[in-house]
Image (cartoon, one colour):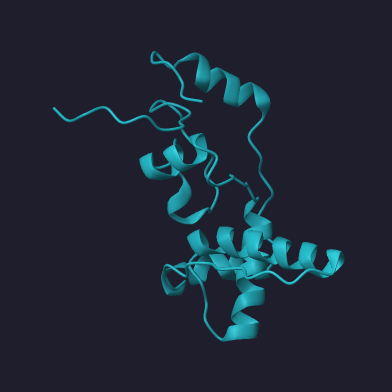
Length: 140
């Protein structure tokens, strides 16, 4: 037995749609990320898979590094923040962690570039149904 550590989750019974979101097709956020979010030291942002792959291909064209889809979520946020800074006339340092290359995801990039990757969002009903099945209290 281990200590129980709280995390934001949709529950272990949640089954994500068969979309390509890299290793992020999981029912919850990591324990450390959950605690940082609860303590309001970070904010959470969601991006659909099309925005993520767009960010990944943009990064690859600029930097010559094909990022893993997991990293593309961070890149999409970094690009949003850079745009916000430009529009507000601010200079800020934007730091991302490039955690892997996308060589194992070339098929997904190819699908995206052919325009065959579909936009998908969870409905509020799907989220509510998963949360209703949780038998533990939520944090936050």
